[in-house]
Image 1 (tube, helix red, strand yellow):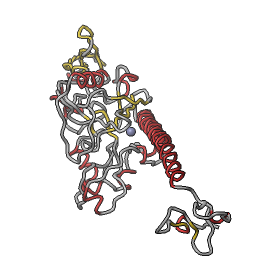
Image 2 (tube, protein in one colour):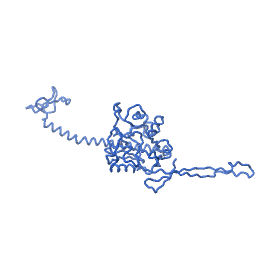
Image 3 (tube, helix red, strand yellow):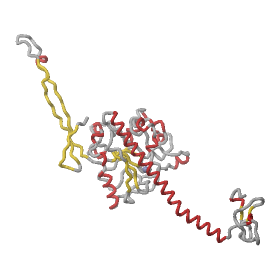
Image 4 (cartoon, protein in one colour):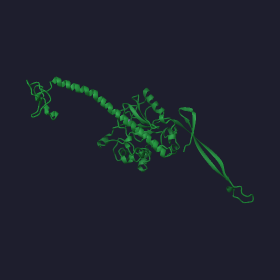
Length: 371
Ligand SMILES: [Zn+2]
């Protein structure tokens, strides 16, 4: 009985395969004239044929297995994005339609250091492993679980991580970390960016407030065509705020392309999609340092696809309308001394309206309440 492959061996001369002392071998030997069953072995030609057959089958099966694995990671990624988008929508229903805060880097650090944990993600991804707040946040589960979306995700922070993002920095590998906690970021035109007056009034952090910031779900003009979350590339991800200038000639923040050149997205209506990038100027291997090249023709098409799903709206101007409303009067007796301010009182009502022009339809102006 062969107990292991080590029980069989090639002798120094000839090419028979014999069992070790006290063991049997399933291979037949060429050297015995009338061999016992235990002395049977393959010839070298037969062995070579078997090896070739196994290699051939491996070549057929392994890519299929790898593809199956990649396919399952794609399914998981799509589900993660869908869960995140739906958690945002559920959250908004509980807070008068407002979207969760989507802080840029300094405001995210403040949210963590003050213990407010009021950002949609309370961590900043880095390649470092020091004791700094940013580095610690790579793996701090308690901070990650403390965000406003947690109740809607049953505190499952795995939704924030694309399963195809398996990357760790050199210092992190040295410390035997298993994973960074997040690879997903949010569209930088969603949620409150910081507490500056410009952001509070619904103007974008990007490009000097040129575009409208979607602070409420009702601000989003075409939810099914407006992306909400994205797989951000491991060399690019830091805060959870993904932004690229509308006039960029190369990616600023960089989308991932882990899924055979495709990137996972969710949209503001709650659905998720994989989008395959056309250009090598959109697809980069992880290099542990951020660098991108200018778009080529295909890259410009990639970026146009991305921009078409931003729904950029030019920030308008604020119209202040003042009304004077007579709310009460006291005619009083003509001979009675009635203080003037009790005779008639007025209330001044100020109504602010923001007028905005649709970026895709310059002839269309919209009015909305900035509060
Ligand atoms: Zn993914």
